[in-house]
Each structure stands twice: as structure tokens, then as C-alpha cells.
Length: 175
Image (cartoon, rainbow, N blue to C red; front, top):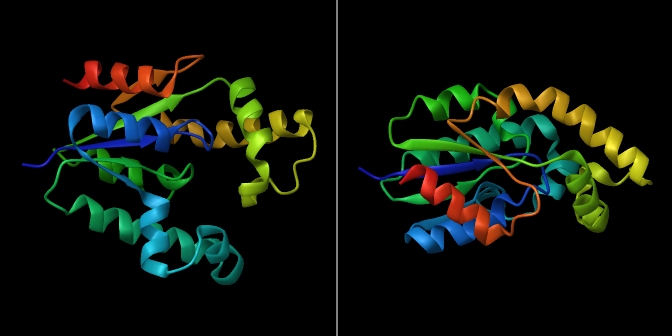
């Protein structure tokens, strides 16, 4: 039976970077849900949101997630920040016997620093203009999303650790 490790957390928490290290360390395939959606749709996630809307995107996201979970291969999969919050996805994932969900829990000030540097690549952050607004934006979002994130089977507190160190911590906790 294939084993799947699902990384979740807020945007900027390092899911993709940590996932690549983890997959390499344990010889699993690495997949990024947003990238898999882009491959299927043949356009960027930001364009899907702009042209087809959030509801279309969330339905496509659920469809691609379910397709990936049905594959018979070991994988580390990084989810989009909002994925766990829609269509009962956490319940779906946590009820699969070959799946472990891992929440990368990062303090808001660290998320804010990271996201201020890359806000131009993130459609949701286009209207955030100051560090104060960023802290408030993340705080509100996390208030809504944490109840979903906290349903993960493993929670990893991340502070100043490198992505490689976080990957090691996950591998040690799971194996």
C-alpha cells in the first residue's frame, strides 16, 4: 500500500520547499497541488481565480486532490493554504488509512516577513500595502483556517528552522 504525507499550512509556511526536502530524504515523489491543477487546466492558479472564479477553482482543487489520493504511489503532497478549509477536505484526508496530514505551524510575524517579500506573486496579497496590514490580514485568515489546520494528524511548530531541518523533524515523527 502506498503512503502519502500531506503538508498543509498557511501560504508562505514552506510547504513546497519542506515537501521537496522530505520527499528527497525518504525517496518519495513530491507533488504540489497547485502545480497539478495548473498542469490540468493549462493556466496558472492566479488566472483560474481571475477568469473562472474561486468556486470553480475550489471544485477543481477537490477533484485533483481526490485523483491524487487514489494513485498507488508513495508521495509527499503540498496543499494550497486554503485547501483544508473547503469540501470537508480534512475529514476526507484524515479518514484515508494510507495518509498522514502534517500542519506546518508558523508564527504570524515570520509569515508576515516572508509574505511581504513575495506579495507580488500572491494574488490574495495584491491589496496589502504595509507590514501592519499584512499582520492583520494573516491574523484574520489564520483565525478562520486554524480549526481546519489543527485537524492534522501531526503538528510541527516551525520557528527559525531551515526547510531541511523541518523535513527531518517530520520524517523522525512519522517513521
